[in-house]
Amino acid sequence: MSHNHDDCSDHAHSGQSKLESVLFSCELSSKVPFYTFQGDEEEDLEHFLELRTVCLGEGAKEESNVVEVTAMNHLGKTNSVPIANLHLSCLPMVSLGDFELKAPVTIRLKAGTGPVTVSGLHLIVSQVEEPDLSDDDDDDDDDDDEEEISPIKPAKKKQQQ
Image 1: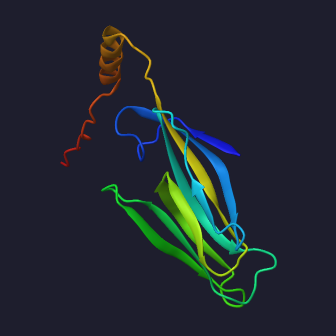
Image 2: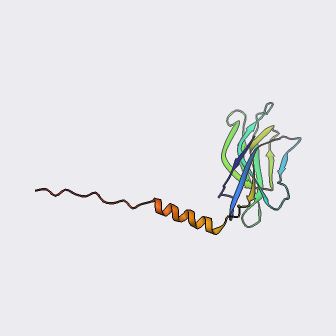
Image 3: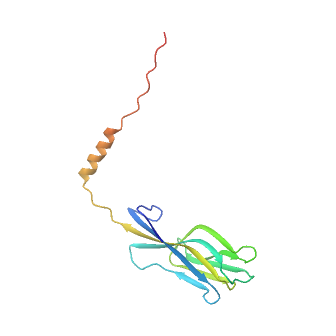
């Protein structure tokens, strides 16, 4: 599953960028208690993880299953935050909306034995080079646009006799 956008101003600092999204899922359990999401090391790509749901899997026990994520904040410091405390009888699934984190991200089953499935989207942002257009062509187009738009004139009122 992949989706492309031509312009994504949320992630781009300047110019245009291309956004591709791919389905993401991982399962945490007592055997595999954490998963680390990392993007490719290419310079022109940024990788984000948009978490959507955290759900208990088949065979989960009647216990609390706490899931936390560890990621960097805007200052470059690593923070760990619990995002779900699931229990089979009262809260087997949590919808996170669009919880977006920049790679690298570690998802950990901090308490419980699971299985817990974490799903969402892997977002890949790449810079798109803009085509080199002649300045003369741009100016001509702008002049044409201005000529086509005429100001709105007020309606004339009839004088009553």
